[in-house]
Length: 602
Image (cartoon, rainbow, N blue to C red; front, side, top):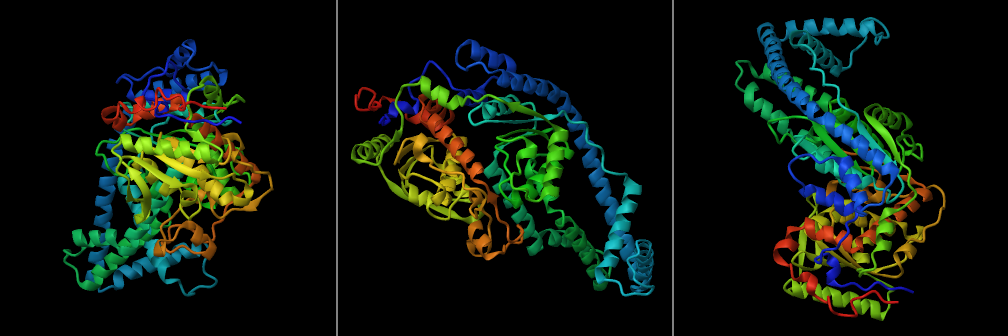
């Protein structure tokens, strides 16, 4: 049995003559100011023997290159559009306030009778038209009058200001799907790097981080509503100083609150509007969203992605996404079919759907070409464990040797305790990271705070301990996405680590450990068991039904990424990406470089 024994040289501090698909995507982020030609770059890599030619990859590179050429003009079109939109929004809000003040003035003059008589007449006409009354003179629900008033005001605004300006026709994005290790993420990252300096608003999300951001925005909006922050701002800015009596001002406040309530019923639209822009820039232009590993793991993911992606695509965002499945095959368990179908329709309308049909896992291909050291120690027996601990000591000694415990912030006001750390390096047991109710938010915080992570005592995983297995998969995803260096001690080789079997459909309340903030700081796991959500941001009783086949795919992806993370080529990218390595520890790679025990042994 072969056991990989690592050295610090494998961290990538010694330059290698070749470069992996993954590393190429990292290197592009430091490219020249001029947008690179994706197709030419891809062909050059093939000619140099750094990437194996793949006709599917070449086709995707060609389509992405065409998209880049269309984006330059589209950016100009969107800049003009946002100027018109800002003028329209300002004018519409100005006219809306005028209408409100006019209605308030009438109410003040009539003592309340005139305006309500007018509203009631309009209300009755609309309700009769739609046969809402059972008989003439029937009682009307209290909120209906305000609803009619709101709709009438919106119609007047449309006639006064006109409807929202039309978004310029956007170039179609790309939805790239295919097998594990087929090059999807590499090509998407090449595109994302090429858009630097071209698009004012661009962002790259992996599925876990995207869902956490969606939930964070939802919670922020709901919290503002509950605390009345937006309403209080409106009152202090103009209602308080109006020359009306308190009763009329209370009416104005109620109208403003009703407008806010209407907006809250479409909270996903509000989230989408802040998802990319986050209201952080005065200048607005085209938006690029690169979305890695689109999944529909549960009801919330389907509802959230459908609402937000539909809104973004309708308002001009260009999407480049990757997934293991075609859009119509994402929802294997048939959850929320109608909502899911709307998502599929939007993706097919706004994206070219392209298959990377290669059966080759290029991560494994690259690993096979490299016979250098690895940083994955197995099995869990004395010699491997000694080497793992020896590596931890040597890394921390080189970094100063002061081992401390610390606490790092996590999303939603939570924290994660780190038992052992030293200048950007952290050490955990598998049970500590994956045997407790932690999840994607914790792992993202971990990956952002530490460039190197040691994980000990990783066991064999199967469907029997799938909760821990799924947490481990999520952990690997985030360490990989943030280009962290990973040292492991494990019970078996990477290929034998996941012993999952196809057991058919089952309920999995962990569901990739997507979390939300709830009362008492509970995680989503607890919420699902109790059937409620304190913050109001997520529907109650959400469960995920994931088939054994889906989990087996997730296991294969994690194994593929673990294999790549052992290669010097990946670790060279870690060094190039983290300035900490470049500036402070250039001698790091010399440790054990002449030690014959720092070689893979049989």
